[in-house]
Length: 417
Image 1 (spheres, rainbow, N blue to C red):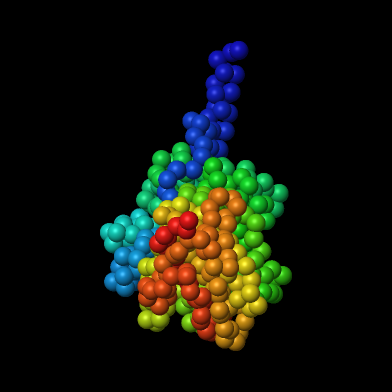
Image 2 (spheres, rainbow, N blue to C red):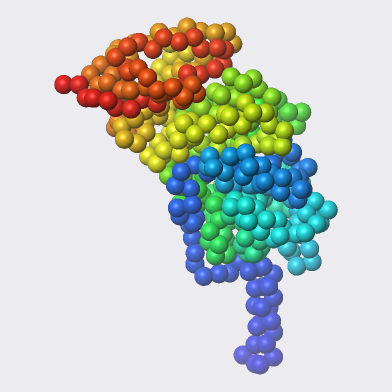
């Protein structure tokens, strides 16, 4: 080979490396482990604001999360969803934070949030464009991951719009590996909607994964969009994924979507929504406007007894045990042999409950755990009423308003002989 041809070949190789925007790296694979040993908790901008986001909103939200007691209750992520960047990448192919929305740049905003003791998250998409039409990450995975690391973010929500012809597992694996190579621990939230059953393959690459299409602020409705897709009430989402609880656990959670508490449902429905997300061990990412939330909404979001069910270190997703008329009974095994039990009224009218504990034995077949009320005695705490008293030796008698719940924590008192 002559020197002339060698130099020409070398130039081609250099050009290919440059055009590959850095996608040739040492072998790194798999998510950052241990970032979500309990379901993540925080706030996301999409449900209320969609793309109408800016620096002032983020700062106000961070301030309120601290002053309202939300941080003390466990919420620690602020996640900016779609619409944070300009419509085009810059000349070097980098994403550009919208200078009108974020005049001081993204790094300064991240530093502000970190200064409040919170963590910061951003959004992008596996496709060529995001769901709102901004630049997607397809072909720029490693470049974007380096940018996120330079900003100092802690959480990436990665969506699934404009992905025709793309293999889901491969696309999310590439982004997961890119985050690992970038060198900053970033929680990877896969937002694939459940179309490709991520619970079967996402555990090694993501800390959580969406299991359905978008949520809608209603109990069990289907909201049909003009563009021929649907959003779902919170009970619809739970019902459509009845048989995947075995795939969820510490650092690999089924994500039932962001919370709609405070976004237009009744007080009872908000309580039930929050309760069910806690029992499902879903991430608790609220999506309301914290600047105008009521005391009732704040009370729901900061109920430490319900949050403790969600954050229980066993990390077991709950399940429906039985149905009695219009009342569903949902259960979740907890540490120290305790159980969370929710009586959910699916009817819009008040229903009477007379539950004979001693007639029931609850078994979790996946985790081989049992609550034998026939022989064992449990102490009862009402997690919404905050009262402790009574045991499973007496029937539970209650009036449950429409779409409301009675939620209890049962703690072992004595074992039967």
